[in-house]
Image (tube, rainbow, N blue to C red; front, side):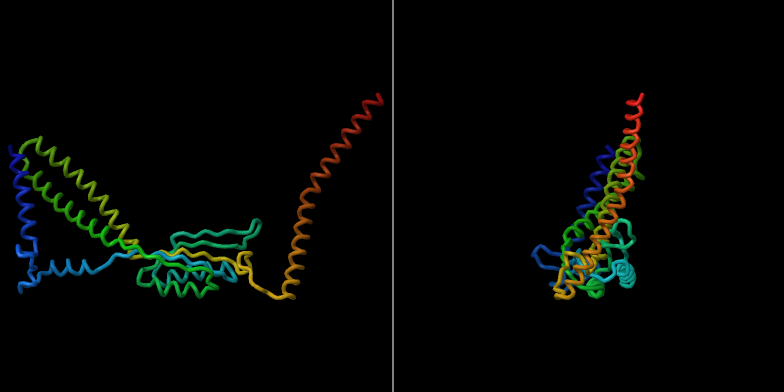
Length: 270
Protein backbone atom coordinates (compact mmCIF):
# COMPACT_ATOMS: atom_id res chain seq x y z
CA UNK A 1 0.00 0.00 0.00
CA UNK A 2 2.82 2.39 0.90
CA UNK A 3 4.56 1.65 -2.42
CA UNK A 4 1.44 2.66 -4.40
CA UNK A 5 1.08 5.87 -2.38
CA UNK A 6 4.72 6.82 -2.99
CA UNK A 7 4.45 6.12 -6.73
CA UNK A 8 1.26 8.22 -6.92
CA UNK A 9 2.98 11.11 -5.13
CA UNK A 10 5.92 10.86 -7.53
CA UNK A 11 3.64 11.00 -10.59
CA UNK A 12 1.75 13.98 -9.21
CA UNK A 13 5.04 15.77 -8.58
CA UNK A 14 6.15 15.12 -12.18
CA UNK A 15 2.91 16.57 -13.55
CA UNK A 16 3.27 19.60 -11.33
CA UNK A 17 6.82 20.25 -12.46
CA UNK A 18 5.78 19.88 -16.10
CA UNK A 19 2.93 22.36 -15.64
CA UNK A 20 5.17 24.85 -13.85
CA UNK A 21 7.90 24.55 -16.48
CA UNK A 22 5.64 25.51 -19.38
CA UNK A 23 6.36 28.89 -20.95
CA UNK A 24 3.25 29.07 -23.14
CA UNK A 25 -0.27 29.91 -21.98
CA UNK A 26 -3.55 28.35 -23.16
CA UNK A 27 -3.89 30.99 -25.88
CA UNK A 28 -0.65 29.74 -27.50
CA UNK A 29 1.26 32.93 -26.54
CA UNK A 30 4.68 32.87 -24.88
CA UNK A 31 5.44 34.70 -21.63
CA UNK A 32 7.63 37.21 -23.48
CA UNK A 33 4.76 38.15 -25.84
CA UNK A 34 2.57 38.94 -22.82
CA UNK A 35 5.15 41.36 -21.47
CA UNK A 36 6.21 39.01 -18.66
CA UNK A 37 9.89 38.95 -17.65
CA UNK A 38 12.03 36.35 -19.37
CA UNK A 39 13.72 34.02 -16.87
CA UNK A 40 17.30 32.76 -17.04
CA UNK A 41 16.10 29.25 -17.95
CA UNK A 42 14.21 30.62 -20.95
CA UNK A 43 17.32 32.47 -22.15
CA UNK A 44 19.34 29.26 -21.92
CA UNK A 45 16.69 27.39 -23.92
CA UNK A 46 16.68 30.08 -26.64
CA UNK A 47 20.48 30.07 -26.82
CA UNK A 48 20.53 26.28 -27.07
CA UNK A 49 18.06 26.43 -29.93
CA UNK A 50 20.41 28.72 -31.86
CA UNK A 51 23.61 26.76 -31.22
CA UNK A 52 24.25 24.09 -33.82
CA UNK A 53 26.35 21.00 -33.16
CA UNK A 54 28.38 20.27 -36.30
CA UNK A 55 30.93 17.49 -36.80
CA UNK A 56 33.51 18.54 -39.40
CA UNK A 57 35.73 16.03 -41.18
CA UNK A 58 38.39 16.86 -43.75
CA UNK A 59 40.71 14.86 -46.00
CA UNK A 60 43.96 16.15 -47.47
CA UNK A 61 46.53 14.54 -49.80
CA UNK A 62 49.81 16.39 -50.29
CA UNK A 63 52.90 15.73 -52.40
CA UNK A 64 56.05 16.61 -50.44
CA UNK A 65 59.77 16.58 -51.18
CA UNK A 66 60.68 14.72 -47.99
CA UNK A 67 58.06 12.56 -46.27
CA UNK A 68 60.01 12.22 -43.00
CA UNK A 69 60.43 15.98 -42.68
CA UNK A 70 56.78 16.59 -43.58
CA UNK A 71 55.64 14.20 -40.82
CA UNK A 72 57.55 16.21 -38.22
CA UNK A 73 56.18 19.48 -39.60
CA UNK A 74 52.61 18.13 -39.53
CA UNK A 75 53.01 17.06 -35.90
CA UNK A 76 54.34 20.49 -34.99
CA UNK A 77 51.43 22.18 -36.78
CA UNK A 78 48.93 20.01 -34.90
CA UNK A 79 50.44 21.16 -31.60
CA UNK A 80 50.54 24.76 -32.80
CA UNK A 81 46.79 24.74 -33.43
CA UNK A 82 46.07 23.15 -30.01
CA UNK A 83 45.42 19.76 -31.57
CA UNK A 84 46.93 16.29 -31.45
CA UNK A 85 47.89 13.35 -33.66
CA UNK A 86 45.60 10.40 -32.88
CA UNK A 87 47.13 7.97 -35.35
CA UNK A 88 50.19 7.81 -37.60
CA UNK A 89 51.34 5.13 -40.05
CA UNK A 90 54.35 5.09 -42.36
CA UNK A 91 55.16 2.92 -45.36
CA UNK A 92 58.87 2.31 -45.92
CA UNK A 93 60.90 0.86 -48.75
CA UNK A 94 61.97 -2.72 -47.83
CA UNK A 95 65.54 -2.70 -46.59
CA UNK A 96 65.55 1.06 -46.12
CA UNK A 97 64.56 3.56 -43.44
CA UNK A 98 63.23 5.99 -46.02
CA UNK A 99 59.48 6.58 -45.81
CA UNK A 100 57.61 6.20 -49.09
CA UNK A 101 54.36 7.68 -47.71
CA UNK A 102 52.54 8.38 -44.46
CA UNK A 103 48.97 8.71 -43.19
CA UNK A 104 48.11 10.80 -40.14
CA UNK A 105 44.84 11.28 -38.27
CA UNK A 106 44.91 14.72 -36.69
CA UNK A 107 42.36 16.44 -34.46
CA UNK A 108 42.22 20.20 -34.00
CA UNK A 109 39.63 22.45 -32.35
CA UNK A 110 36.79 23.14 -34.79
CA UNK A 111 37.43 26.88 -34.49
CA UNK A 112 40.99 26.35 -35.80
CA UNK A 113 40.12 23.94 -38.62
CA UNK A 114 40.25 26.41 -41.54
CA UNK A 115 43.59 27.92 -40.47
CA UNK A 116 45.05 24.49 -39.78
CA UNK A 117 44.07 23.21 -43.23
CA UNK A 118 45.70 26.20 -44.89
CA UNK A 119 48.93 25.59 -42.97
CA UNK A 120 48.93 21.89 -43.86
CA UNK A 121 48.48 22.78 -47.54
CA UNK A 122 51.69 24.80 -47.36
CA UNK A 123 53.67 21.59 -46.71
CA UNK A 124 53.76 20.79 -50.43
CA UNK A 125 51.62 20.38 -53.55
CA UNK A 126 47.96 19.64 -52.77
CA UNK A 127 46.73 16.65 -54.76
CA UNK A 128 43.22 16.44 -53.28
CA UNK A 129 41.26 18.20 -50.58
CA UNK A 130 37.75 17.74 -49.18
CA UNK A 131 35.72 18.74 -46.14
CA UNK A 132 32.34 17.52 -44.92
CA UNK A 133 29.99 18.62 -42.14
CA UNK A 134 27.39 16.56 -40.27
CA UNK A 135 24.70 18.27 -38.19
CA UNK A 136 24.12 16.35 -34.93
CA UNK A 137 22.16 19.07 -33.12
CA UNK A 138 19.02 16.96 -32.66
CA UNK A 139 21.04 13.99 -31.44
CA UNK A 140 22.83 16.12 -28.85
CA UNK A 141 19.60 17.80 -27.69
CA UNK A 142 17.98 14.38 -27.32
CA UNK A 143 20.89 13.08 -25.25
CA UNK A 144 20.85 16.20 -23.05
CA UNK A 145 17.13 15.77 -22.41
CA UNK A 146 17.44 12.07 -21.59
CA UNK A 147 20.36 12.72 -19.24
CA UNK A 148 18.39 15.44 -17.45
CA UNK A 149 15.30 13.21 -17.15
CA UNK A 150 17.32 10.29 -15.78
CA UNK A 151 19.13 12.54 -13.30
CA UNK A 152 15.77 13.79 -11.99
CA UNK A 153 14.41 10.23 -11.84
CA UNK A 154 17.45 9.01 -9.92
CA UNK A 155 17.03 11.75 -7.31
CA UNK A 156 13.38 10.79 -6.82
CA UNK A 157 14.25 7.12 -6.39
CA UNK A 158 16.84 8.07 -3.80
CA UNK A 159 14.05 9.85 -1.91
CA UNK A 160 11.82 6.77 -2.21
CA UNK A 161 14.62 4.59 -0.84
CA UNK A 162 15.01 6.95 2.13
CA UNK A 163 11.27 6.80 2.81
CA UNK A 164 10.87 3.02 2.33
CA UNK A 165 9.55 1.22 5.41
CA UNK A 166 9.71 -2.41 4.30
CA UNK A 167 12.22 -4.64 2.55
CA UNK A 168 10.20 -5.28 -0.62
CA UNK A 169 9.75 -1.57 -1.36
CA UNK A 170 13.43 -0.95 -0.65
CA UNK A 171 14.59 -3.74 -3.01
CA UNK A 172 12.24 -2.59 -5.80
CA UNK A 173 13.42 1.01 -5.51
CA UNK A 174 17.11 0.04 -5.39
CA UNK A 175 16.72 -2.21 -8.46
CA UNK A 176 15.05 0.57 -10.43
CA UNK A 177 17.72 3.02 -9.25
CA UNK A 178 20.54 0.72 -10.41
CA UNK A 179 18.95 0.34 -13.86
CA UNK A 180 18.57 4.09 -14.29
CA UNK A 181 22.09 4.75 -13.05
CA UNK A 182 23.52 2.31 -15.60
CA UNK A 183 21.49 3.94 -18.38
CA UNK A 184 22.62 7.39 -17.22
CA UNK A 185 26.29 6.33 -17.30
CA UNK A 186 25.85 5.03 -20.86
CA UNK A 187 24.13 8.20 -22.06
CA UNK A 188 26.74 10.37 -20.36
CA UNK A 189 29.52 8.51 -22.17
CA UNK A 190 27.68 8.91 -25.51
CA UNK A 191 27.19 12.61 -24.88
CA UNK A 192 30.86 13.07 -23.97
CA UNK A 193 31.98 11.29 -27.15
CA UNK A 194 29.59 13.30 -29.32
CA UNK A 195 30.69 16.57 -27.74
CA UNK A 196 34.34 15.72 -28.39
CA UNK A 197 33.55 14.98 -32.05
CA UNK A 198 31.91 18.39 -32.33
CA UNK A 199 34.64 20.28 -30.48
CA UNK A 200 37.61 18.56 -32.19
CA UNK A 201 37.48 18.29 -35.98
CA UNK A 202 39.40 15.47 -37.68
CA UNK A 203 41.88 15.82 -40.53
CA UNK A 204 42.93 12.74 -42.49
CA UNK A 205 46.32 13.73 -43.88
CA UNK A 206 48.13 11.70 -46.56
CA UNK A 207 51.76 12.59 -47.28
CA UNK A 208 53.10 11.31 -50.61
CA UNK A 209 56.48 11.75 -52.32
CA UNK A 210 56.83 14.01 -55.34
CA UNK A 211 58.49 11.32 -57.47
CA UNK A 212 55.67 8.78 -57.15
CA UNK A 213 54.43 7.17 -60.36
CA UNK A 214 50.95 8.47 -59.60
CA UNK A 215 52.23 12.04 -59.82
CA UNK A 216 53.75 11.99 -63.34
CA UNK A 217 54.37 15.43 -64.78
CA UNK A 218 56.00 16.55 -68.06
CA UNK A 219 59.76 16.79 -67.48
CA UNK A 220 61.18 17.44 -70.98
CA UNK A 221 63.20 15.38 -73.45
CA UNK A 222 66.66 15.67 -71.85
CA UNK A 223 65.29 15.09 -68.36
CA UNK A 224 63.49 12.03 -69.72
CA UNK A 225 66.75 10.64 -71.13
CA UNK A 226 68.44 11.24 -67.78
CA UNK A 227 65.70 9.46 -65.87
CA UNK A 228 65.83 6.64 -68.43
CA UNK A 229 69.54 6.09 -67.76
CA UNK A 230 68.89 6.20 -64.02
CA UNK A 231 66.15 3.60 -64.39
CA UNK A 232 68.49 1.42 -66.52
CA UNK A 233 71.24 1.60 -63.90
CA UNK A 234 68.75 0.77 -61.17
CA UNK A 235 67.52 -2.22 -63.17
CA UNK A 236 71.11 -3.40 -63.70
CA UNK A 237 71.85 -3.02 -60.00
CA UNK A 238 68.73 -5.00 -59.13
CA UNK A 239 69.67 -7.73 -61.64
CA UNK A 240 73.13 -7.97 -60.10
CA UNK A 241 71.57 -8.31 -56.68
CA UNK A 242 69.31 -11.10 -57.93
CA UNK A 243 72.25 -12.97 -59.49
CA UNK A 244 74.25 -12.55 -56.30
CA UNK A 245 71.33 -14.02 -54.35
CA UNK A 246 71.12 -17.16 -56.51
CA UNK A 247 74.90 -17.84 -56.95
CA UNK A 248 75.28 -19.63 -53.56
CA UNK A 249 72.32 -21.88 -54.45
CA UNK A 250 73.85 -22.68 -57.84
CA UNK A 251 77.20 -23.54 -56.25
CA UNK A 252 75.49 -25.76 -53.68
CA UNK A 253 73.58 -27.57 -56.45
CA UNK A 254 76.81 -28.16 -58.45
CA UNK A 255 78.53 -29.58 -55.37
CA UNK A 256 75.66 -32.01 -54.85
CA UNK A 257 75.90 -33.14 -58.49
CA UNK A 258 79.69 -33.66 -58.21
CA UNK A 259 79.32 -35.70 -55.01
CA UNK A 260 76.63 -37.87 -56.57
CA UNK A 261 78.80 -38.57 -59.64
CA UNK A 262 81.83 -39.42 -57.50
CA UNK A 263 79.77 -41.85 -55.42
CA UNK A 264 78.40 -43.44 -58.62
CA UNK A 265 81.87 -43.90 -60.14
CA UNK A 266 83.20 -45.38 -56.91
CA UNK A 267 80.43 -47.95 -56.86
CA UNK A 268 81.05 -48.88 -60.52
CA UNK A 269 84.79 -49.33 -59.91
CA UNK A 270 84.09 -51.83 -57.14
